[in-house]
Image (cartoon, rainbow over all chains, first blue to last red; front, side, top):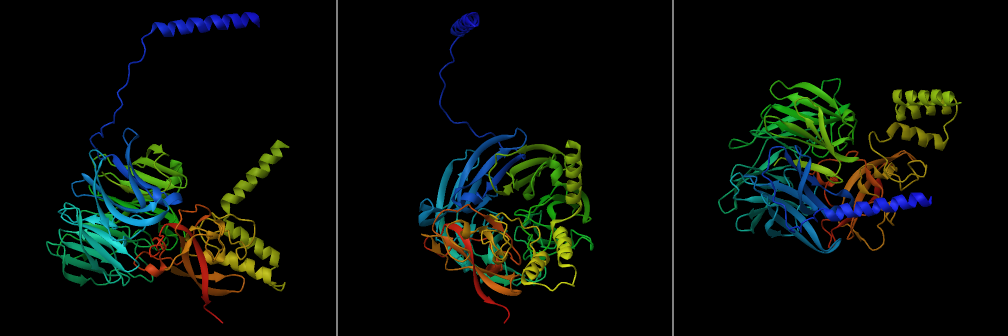
Length: 382
Length: 183
């Protein structure tokens, strides 16, 4: 034993001598990493932080390097959108003066998406719709001239904002119809309980000049429409509780409703359903629709998908079914697909929390990340 | 002995994979009641109703004490919670119909219609949030039966129903009976 201790002491002396002989590490410069140039394989993950909802955030992730690039604070029940040039992120949110209590402050905060620096804000009246994330809680006009914020008090209306001048221009009552679907430079549509769209047209100052109700295009009683629309080349596609696909063309002078088609065969209808928070995504170059599907009945419309079903939008035919269990991922509550020539599919689960990156052509898993928030309920393309 | 354990385990797993929980409860219920020969006692009625109406695909995240859905108010599958999505106030210092101390009762709410297996009646219930404190975080429960999207606001639970309170942070949710649909 005594001999062992002697040898150990000798080795320790030799090791310290070798360390002393090498050069010390140089002093470091304390600084801040620049944000790299964005690629189509980045995603912005909206973590609604359901267990502590005043602390939502948006996390930036590079699926090629598996790198965590940064974070944008998002407060309480945020609505998140990007400017048409993708260089600014607007986050409509609420803060309380004393953390969980105190004065309510509704605000839209703007972040420069090349630096992640906050660049300004617009304080809103305390009316902002504090709802789970969709594309339609907050949205820019196509020319970036206006920003629209959905209000629910519970009376429904929307705020017209000037993002350049950083000010509120006015408020437009929507007669019970909810959310803001901006299209063109001066139109905003809202979804009504009657199964119609209300479209308000604005003048250059943001005042209402006209409004129009569409025909009824879905049946609220028998097959309600999810409000989580999916961007298409001409507008948005909406899915119904029972799996009908409603494509709405917003490229003309008024919304045009295509004939609905079904994700399901007659035998599957009522047994399999779309479900989750962000339940569909479209790869616009390929014309492919990806949907989170599960087996379930009434009341399961927020249940995450146990399979991803892939459809060809030209033929309306299902071309793949990818079981989520094979990816070692919980039920999928949100999904998104990149819009480049080598598309990636992003699948987010909140139970347990993880985001999987999958080849959008084959369904093969590339990587799973478990550090992108507790309830990742929306994923945005950069 | 280990071989016997493996055989039993394998058989149990195989049975579990081939049968759903609901079908198991249904088969067990039929065996116990002996078809129609034995008069149905009140407890049988409760169990039958639950087997028939138990929420499909709705996780029971609430704390369960092994009590049926008509008694355990900290269980997500308690009958009054049929359209809830949030934290159960009964796990946060309140009860199924009252807020925890020091919170504010929401002044607006959404409604649902839930079936009570104990008396066979349908009840209209008001889902009120308790407000003014940060998220409770206990007994996260979502059922969503007959819940509808945001455009049908009175049936929607994807919005903060503390919105009209002076303290509008969301803490937890209660379910308050407004009335029954029958005599």
